[in-house]
Structures are given as structure tokens and as C-alpha cells.
Image (cartoon, rainbow, N blue to C red; front, side, top):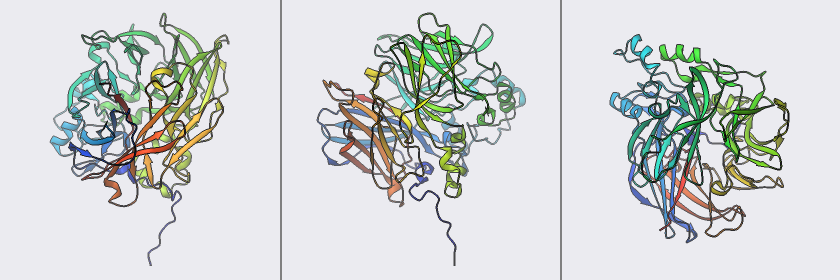
Length: 511
């Protein structure tokens, strides 16, 4: 008789991350709507994320390496349509043409190209935008009236928000010599865009803030320029950073003790090793929070706090002489290990797996009149797993706020697929979940003429675990943001599996 090992996390179906889309949906599918979508809710929810782990007979080894898949939910007059297309990056095209993985990724080593000599690899060190993968499968952000797909290498891709066609490839090495940048720039109310990256300034590698000034006519990238910079805490080991903060007077850089070893990166690129092998975690070093002046671009002050790892900052703002940093914090960087495909496949027998993903929302309150390098103790905002956080961005990014929305990071929860809302003033939490259902990043959309911060809806893409039929089902859910109850959902049956996505953007239709 066959023996079956009991699952450690029986409520969590990790297969939603392991799916590969086999057939794009070019012509919009019409969804089956239950409930009633508010008449005022009109626009497009665009999503980005891992789309296929397979290229021919080869398979990627890390979730961040999966071929980027774009999703589009178009909401109009109470109905919803759905499309999905692969991003036509150079990496995607090369892999498809070869029928195997030929470009080394964040966590996957490609089969070396016999036509590339060691001299080619040395030359590639000076062209990171061309030598590294441009598989932009993390996020989507607008630059003016154009939409771009992002990853952390310096190449971004313009997409058509209606057809999901890949229109243009931009290498930011050409405009501001960025070696890399975060996947989460900040879009300001006036249309300006800021991002944090690394560049060589006066012969030294620096963390830099780049401004892309909004212009109705012309190229925002042509006018891009560095507005602030700081030296890494360790010159040869700059910190890995996925997001940053912005307030009225400061850029906020959280310098965690996960570093990118520059020497290892050079060595690994020459030997065709993946980027993840260049990352080093220093468990005995504190995390620094650095304030850079938005007025003159100089470093103003550093603070210290406990050793922590983070991917996403929830929000930052100034109030009553204090700068507040709300962040999704982990005790270490094991969450990156948890996203290896083998780790996901074996999670049900890994007693440590839930702890690897044990993120919590924490608040750091930085007195602006404190001494340099003052130590700050974080405060727990809610005892719930917290990832891909979103706020009422247009009105409260960089300003005082009260509410944020996120998805659970607790794989051992009663329902791991939970959307959470946290009241940062009272600590009250509200949640929404459905059986064996896995939401992606929740996005708040304000109601027309809204007076309250949470007056509007939360829109979110859903996938389901379980049966083979469930893998070919995707939905858009609309929640009342105040009460976190379901108003409506549109469900679609697709011809091939739909993987869980990561980040996205909502484009309201105003006409």
C-alpha cells in the first residue's frame, strides 16, 4: 500500500505559482459577472507576473525567472473582458528561437552559447542592459500616457495597454547610465516619475535617485537626470533594494544587510552564473534608513534599526517632526530562497517554509531632530502576513495615510489566499477570502467625488488551486474597500493554465 506524507500546510496550494501559460488570449474573453459592478468603475486593470516556467524541455529554477506574462481586465458598463500576452523581451525571443533557455536569469544558469568567447563576456560587463536578462516580469508603471513593464535590470518595455503588444525596448543605460533600478518607481501627481538605482557618479558606484520629468510632448527619458545620490554603506557590496520611499522633503532609502557583491557579480558573469549567487546576507548587521534631501540631493541623516529584510515599503510620510516608514519586514532574506521552484514543490515537507515567508507590517518612526545614526525600534502594525501592499496612492503616497491593502504571506494560515486591510491608526484589520482562492496584489480605486480615504473599491485578480479545471479559471473581484465585502466578480474560463501574477496598475477610463 502506498504511503502518503501528511501535508504541513494543507490549506496552501503552491501549484498556482508553478503553472505555465500555453496559449495567449489575444481576442478578449467576456467574463461571467456575479453581483453588480459599480457603474462608475470603468477602466483597465493591467497585471504582470510569471507566465511560463518552461522553454522547450528546459525549465527555470526560480520564480523570478519565469517568462513575463501580461494580463488585461477591461471594465466597461458592468462587464469585464480578459486577455493575456507574453512580453516580447529580447530574452523571450532568444529563448523561443533556440527552443531552450539561452539567457542566464536571476536564479537560472543557461546553457552557454558556444559562439560566445570569454572576450565577449568581458565586453558584456560594460553593457549590463544588453548582457543581462531583460525579462521584465515584475511590475507595470505609466510614464505620461505610456505604460512600461519593469524588472530590476536597466531595460524596460513599452506595451500597448489595449492589445498587450510589446511596442518598444528602452535601455536606461542610454539616458542616465543606470546599472540597475527598482521595479517600483514613484509616479507623482504632476506626472513626474522618480526611481532609485545604481550609477557611476564621479568615478564611484552610487545609489542614485533619477527624475523623469513629465512632459506632454517629448521624451521623458531624454530629460532624465540624477537628483540625489549616496554612497553605499559597503562600497563593494551595495545593498539590494526593491522599493524606496518619498515624502514632501526627502527620498527614503532603506539599506538592508542583503548586498550585491560586485566582485562576485563580475566573476559570475564571466562564468555565466546566475545573479542570485552574487547576493550575500549579513545577519549580524543592522538595517540603515537614509534620508536624502529632495532640495539639494545630499544625504541628510542615517538611522539604524533591527536586522531585517524587505521587498516592499508600504508608505513613507512626514508628520509633526517625525518621518514615518511603514514596511513589510522579514527577519531575514529566506523568502528569496522560498521562491526557488524546487522549494515551492517541496514546501509541504519543509517545516521551515512558513517561517521563510513570515513577513509582518512594521512602522519605524524617525524623529527628524534626532542625532545621526540614532537607533529606532520598529512597532508592529498588525499581526498578519503582509505582501504586495497598496494604498490610496494618488492622494496619500508620501503623505499621511490611514489604510493599506495587501495579501497574506502566511502559507500556514487557515486561508493563505486572504486579502487584508489594515487601519494603521487603530490596528483594526479586515479580511476577505474564498475557498482555495489566491488573490494577487489588491489595488484601491477611489469612487468619484469620494471624501474618505477608503471610499471606493479594491480590484484584484484571482486564481484557484486544486483541480486541473481550476488552473484554467481566472477572475476579477471587486470589493467594497470600506467593509471588505464582495460587490461583484467576473470569472473567465481559459484554454490553458493561468499562473498567479505579481504587480499591476489600474488605468481609469475618464471619457
